[in-house]
Length: 362
Image (cartoon, rainbow, N blue to C red):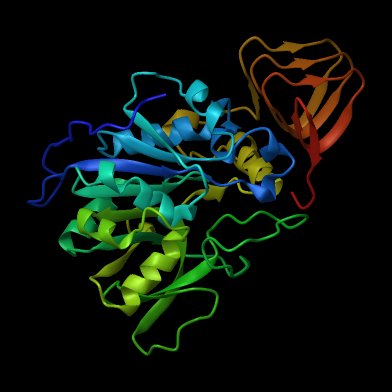
């Protein structure tokens, strides 16, 4: 496991179409949560380590942050912390883990890492259970031009998506998976954040209500608002900064740079299975690390599939899994090292070595 050390900051080429240069950047992945909505699966594996087309989500996010210009990536961990280091694909990646003896929530987790993050001018924040096709690069440009203290990356939301404040607990069981974040962030015409929460603001300056993607950017000066010894949420800190007029808290609309936003969380069995449906069956391109192959089937290495097995819809089978004779699987994800017993008939299901989760509402 990498020790906590200050990495040599990165300075990139000039950004497109303006005079700004990429500042010294690091990435942060928030990965310390218990994953209660994903139980019982999260009892055995943290959500950020769940595979998507055979690749642990955290590896996909690390590569995304490195592509965005981060010279190092810092990850806060707590639940099943010992599993993280063994799941990193490349040991040469500049990844530093920050183990929390007691969980500090998202805001306290950032504060706990502040000594390491202070070496950088910009900090790219990414929730550890979110995946999307949203690029940080235009949001960094926006953040610099607006001289913001913090920038939340936002997107339009669907009317059918329920309204939950970012970070608020939600029970997805039996409900269709969302494909956009919940509507919870009010912004002004000047793209400043006015309010975050389930209740729409009555501020006359409000332009529209948007959804928080789980991605944001902090300037180094914002770190002083994040306590390192207190359990507190990221959103709570932003709200306090807004109330105290600490500096410009901006909202960047990702839709302005991308014609079609693809977004998903993997916070529940419904959303995790739906993500694979969108990639395998609908051929949705979320990230170059998990580009769809053209067929609704993905099979990992060293997997054994016995004769007589059939599948419908889509099927994801992780590495070193074993599917015995005469199984029928429809719209299923089989995690690595799972054995599917002879004659199994399942639909809309996640199978893992310790059990299975039958999903409703897919």
